[in-house]
Structures are given as structure tokens and as C-alpha cells.
Image (cartoon, rainbow over all chains, first blue to last red; front, side, top):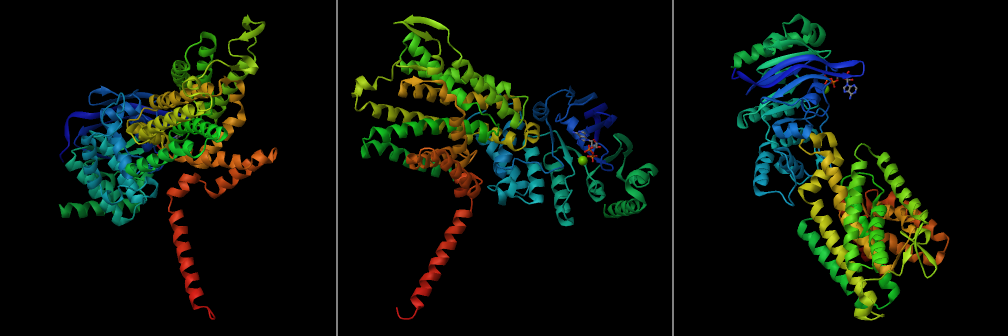
Length: 268
Length: 346
Ligand SMILES: Nc1ncnc2c1ncn2[C@@H]1O[C@H](COP(=O)(O)OP(=O)(O)O)[C@@H](O)[C@H]1O
Ligand SMILES: [Mg+2]
């Protein structure tokens, strides 16, 4: 589709993460081109979240190399990686619970966009205006003043995306953005992510189990199993790959996936 | 509460506190208010570390004591003016607090409490063990820190010469009020600034905060440094006001009293220290005549307060709970009114 493959925005080379004897991410290599949306699937425990943890610096890699915008970010602390333009969301709807929606997005916008040496006593006009825009377009306007711990699951997911966007990322990592949502909310979230892609021209990597979501959003899909890549290619090819069907999808889901893709192609 | 409401409440309280000396000239009452200013001031700064940033440091009284001892020692040994030594005490406290901040970086939760408590206990033990005489003025041994009996008679803020013996307490009252006003404004600015949000973000979810650009190491050290200054100033003020300081300032009972005040008032909330210290000191005052039962009474009060208001007094007032009870009471009184009007033979 509109993937720009000239220079990869992000390049992972032999990235490995071990927890004692367990190798959660096993010598994984892949690139993400600017402007593309890469989907990551795979059974529970495949190492998808750990891969995000390593990429975002929350957990240090055991070995390997991660390059982002031409810079080696493998050993940078998470706050530097964020300032460099790589933002993520969390599988467990993480937010700053005692802060309001507005304060959550404000402090993400303030600290996340570039490194702050010494914080000022108040937020500047520009940050406030930018945050207002983000809150508006992520659908959080009605809960601006509400504490984050009083939000619904959907609102917390929206808040996480809003906070990540507020750091003005070039690359956004979404960890199961529709997990735990009902079909209507899934559609709403898919719509939001698509708008993020077009309005903010953000490159996206999205982990998702909901195949409908992957098919709707992604230019390319990677399937992981035991920390390794077992498939990389089009979403359409996922359902016909024998290994993916065996370890992840199963026959029934593979059929449904083929059905979904056929449906989408007739739509387009 | 909006910023405007907070400021209005603060100004109102300030006017009331400024007017207290017009209502009473009792040296005892004014002295108790000064003590309240000191404890409230320390808890306000402690709340930045313990409540806002969520780091379970128990070092605050030790930081206070560093300020107090630094100013007392400078006034005692070098005859510096108390005004100056208080400022130096504040700076010494910032340095100490910063070092403690660094020391806590690799620890979490209860381990921070243990480490900081151990540091405070070590300071007290070192002071008590200090018996090396610096000089023998008039035949008495003078040690650097004063040892177990502490330092005394090293000078005050000069209000006695300025206002006379009877009114000196007024000068100290207003100096204390000034210190807590500026200290509270300082805390308020921090809590409501980007910095305060960074502290709270790290407390709420440190991994998420790091992924949003907040450097834990930097801000954890910073909150310790910031909370040090006014604690040190108040330590110096304490030394100047009582014209004495001793190792008992580091007693666990004082620390516990202040910690309890913070919890009863509402941890991490701007008005928590004020509500907590006022409630605890008032209750302590009421139990004055009970002698040995006083500690028990205070303990019972704490337990009841914590069970009734798990979020502290301020947390309770801010929650919808109060409004709910209020509307129930109005409903009840309307029903009673209705019932009374209908009752026969009235
Ligand atoms: N902090 C950790 N310590 C030890 N093991 C971990 C840790 N985080 C994840 N794991 C293990 O790594 C494997 C991959 O987990 P994860 O990345 O969460 O999988 P996924 O997101 O694909 O479901 C799992 O077996 C998990 O138990
Ligand atoms: Mg996961």
C-alpha cells in the first residue's frame, strides 16, 4: 500500500531478551518503514509485549541492536527513547490514576516531546492548545476533568493513545489496543487508529489478537511464536500459512480470516 | 477545588491566624500555635516526598534536625546571628536531603522507610555519643553537638530586645506564620506545576511515567532537594524559638506523631498536613490532663480517624461522601418536619 520502504524508520537486528532460562524474544530481526502499519500477532506468551518493552527501553535488551531514525537506541533509557519520538501504549491500561484526563495528557505532552532539563512552574500556552486538540480528537472531551481511575475501559484505552500521541511520536507502538472491548468499541478504536495514521502521519506497530483489527489496519503482518518470527507478509497470507494456522489460528479462525479478507477486498 | 478557591481559603485562614494574637495574649496558647506552625510546616514538606511523590521516606525529622543543629551550632560556637544561621540551616538541610534522595534510588517501598529510619537513628546515636570536649569554658565540657543534653542559650531572633520580654513571643509567632505561609505557597506551586505532575505520575505508575519522558532518578532526587529547604529553615526556627536543641528531636515518637498527622489529614493532598496537624494537636491538647492515658487516647483517635476516613480528613471532604450525607440529613429533616406538622394534638 503506501509503505515507504526506502529507509526503515525502525530496524531491529537480532534483538534478544532473556529472563533467566526463558528466552522471551529470540534473535528477532525486522524493519518498519516510515508511514507503514505493521501488525504483530501470535499466541499468548510469544514475547510480543516483551518486544515492545525492549524497544521502548522499559526493559533492557539482553543483546541485539535497535536503530530508530538512524540512531542506536538499544541502550537508551525509556525517557530518552520517548523524547526521540518512539511512544508506546501498555497492554494493561496504564495511566496516572490520581491525575485527571487533562493532567495525564498535559504531563505526557510536556515531558515526552523533548527532554526537559528543568520544568517550568506552569504549562505553556502551546502545550495546552496542543493537548486540547488531542483530547478533542481522541474522544475524551467529556471527561477532561475526571480522574483517570474513574474512566471506563474504552476511555482508558483512548487516554493511553492520547498520552502517547501527546509526545509527538514518529513511531507509535500499540499493545492490544482493542483487548477487552466490545464489537462497537472495537470499531470506534479502529477508526481512531486509522485517524492517527492519516491526521498525525504516524508510523504504527500494533499488537493484536483480534484478526479483524489487524486486517483492517495493517499493511504487513508479523506472527511471533516462542520469541521468534514465524511469518512476515501480507495479512491475506496469514490464514494460508500452515505453520501459523497450526500454532496460532487453528482451522476455524483461519477460515474466518479468509472470509474477512475476501469481504474487505470486495469492499475496496 | 479550583486554584482560586484554594487561594481564597488560604487567605481566609491566614487572616484568622494573623488575628489570633489579638484575641489572646496567653503565652501558652501562642507558644502552642508556634509549635503547630513548626509541625505543620515540616509535614507540608514531608508530604511532597511521602504523599505527592509516594516515596516512603522517614528522614524528614532528621532533615529538620540537620537544619536545627546547623543553626544552633553556628550560633553557639561562632556566635553567628540566628537569622543567618537559619538560612545556613536551610541550605544544609537541602544538601542532606539530596544525599538521602540519592541513597534511596535503588530501593522501593518499605525498604526506603527502613533505610531512612536507620539514618535518623544513626544521627541521634552519633549526637548522644558525642562527648569529646572542644573546650572547658568555666570548667564545663563543651562538645560540638552538645551530646545527650543538647545545646542551649545560644541566642534568639532578637525579638526580646526589639519588642520587650512580654511581646517577644509575638515576633516569633509572626515569623513562624511567615515561614509556613511561604512554605505552603512553595508546596502548592510544586504540587500544581508540571513538576508536581511528574512526581505524581512516577508514584502512580513509574514504568508508564518513564515511557512518557519522565526521568525517575532526576525527579526522585529533586523532590528530596525541594522538600529539604523549608524543613531546614523550620529546624533553625525551632532552635531559635526554644533557644535550645537536643537529640530528643529525633525521637521516634515525634516522627510517629507527624506521620500520623499526615495520614489523618490526607496523604498527598495539599490541605492534608494542615487538617492533620490541627486535628492531632487539638486532640492532644484535649487529652492534656490524662497523663499516661494521653498516648493511648491519641492512638485510639488515630485508629478511629483512619478507619472512618481512609483517604484522610481532606480526602473525605473532597469526595462526594460529604454531599451524600448532607443530602440525606436534609431529606431526614424534611421528613421529621413533615411528621411533626402532621402529628395530632400539636
Ligand atoms: N519481567 C518478566 N520476568 C520474567 N518473565 C517474563 C517477564 N515478562 C514476561 N515474561 C515471560 O516472557 C514470555 C513472553 O511474555 P509476553 O511478552 O508478555 O508475551 P505476549 O505479550 O506475547 O503474550 C512469557 O513466558 C512471560 O511469562
Ligand atoms: Mg502481551
